[in-house]
Amino acid sequence: MRDILLVSATKLEHHEDTLNGCPIHIIGVGKVQAAINTTKLIAKYKPKIVVNFGSCGNLKDHKVGEVLEIGTVYNDFETYGLIDCPPIKFGNSDQFKCFTTDLFYDSTKDDYSQSYLQKINECNVVDMELYSIAKSCLDAGIFLYCYKWVSDDGNHKSWKENAALGYNNFKTIINERFS
Image (cartoon, rainbow, N blue to C red; front, side):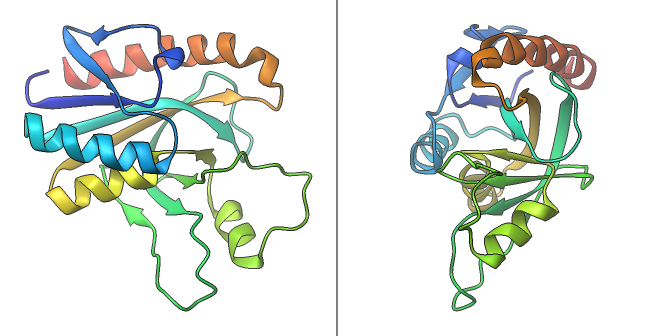
């Protein structure tokens, strides 16, 4: 897995320092930390490929532990149509879409803007880092793959066990794809 930079928000999602001998770099939770640290890592290691992986919240009917290869990411940045903030497409798959937000999305709230809800409705999952990672890779001309596993089934008390299940499923996929 030479020339590949593995990035994850937090070690709590996987509890390992390496994957197949390749270091896992922790970039932090949230868009700001992800942008800063991904950009620094790209500058330092000059990878050909960045692979982001981690847990996510479910917006559709995916099963806990299911791993999705994300190909499009939307930003929660609300511009009210004044500034264009288009989704970013990357990787080899456009089947699954992710919505990146700095807030925990709560489907029971009704005070979100119409454009926010439209983006949510277009996406399969929600996370807190991918848009920034994709923007850093796009700006650097680096190819990005992203794998998110569903760990949020609406019960935060089961997040740790759900994240562990998803990570084990992810390891199977990464071994098949990059070994």
